[in-house]
Image (cartoon, rainbow, N blue to C red):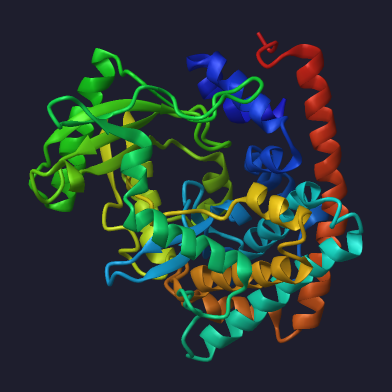
Length: 438
């Protein structure tokens, strides 16, 4: 019932897409985890899930809302350097830092199901959770003391998994792989977006597909791109082609996305740019997180972009980041390029299965994730205008060991709730189908 409630807007508009989303959620524990952030935050509001390491001030922190392993990815910053940062702030708001840390820890519990047979012992998984807690608390203390937060760059000692992401991002970015993946040149040498399935569909859902937009959708994109350019103070770039993107994400699987092919700095097809326009809407997660202390924005696109710029390492990780409003629609815009590559649970599982990567590599990426979350929380101002690290340090109160043990205990206890929810969801989906609520 609660999953239906969280998807009722899209069920009314496009039940077929929601059915595909549910099929994707049922394909594995990690996909189910990605599609149930609303349920997680609903559970965290219950008294039995309260944390002893929360104060009034630490419930006003800028939170990512849905931090998980696959929401960490690479960017090429404005200085040309590759870096690693959070890449999804759709659920961002001002709320309890503790729920963000717990959500991150649970993502590793969910991912561990894919890492079998290496992760068959709860102790191994809980060791990873403890690494998240320790690295988070250590980084918060570093920031509160006035020292520089972690910076992830190629060549640093950040572990094999992060090194792999950055190396592949550099290669794909230099090769302009996204243009090759999503576009082709016609007989006249003009670049166009490819229509059709770009990856083999999975049972029950599309993986990656571009389809022809309707006339109404084309008109909507034109208005949105004009608004996006105007807000950024840019001369509107020439739109060369538009397609609707299907199959992306899990939580956002059913939202409307467009890929907009734009002319780049020159008239050459070689430097064309793809901009993604992604529908964003009222987030029950963000509303629950922010409460009475929330900062209000004129649109969800503005909320996401403002908090993303404040929570990322630099406000211009992606120079194409922006938003557009065409009532009643709100869109978040971003650049689609090879330099942006996320951590992939499937790739980690594959390399663990052949023992190319090992437990130590998972521990290393868990530590990086914990520090990255601390940086997002600690370097940003709270809803009351105080540095996040200051209020979080007070909430932990110097009891790093207790904070870590509390996180481990939560992961052990709530991990069972999560696994049971997944089993119930999968059973009901098989028994009733995705849209039987009607």
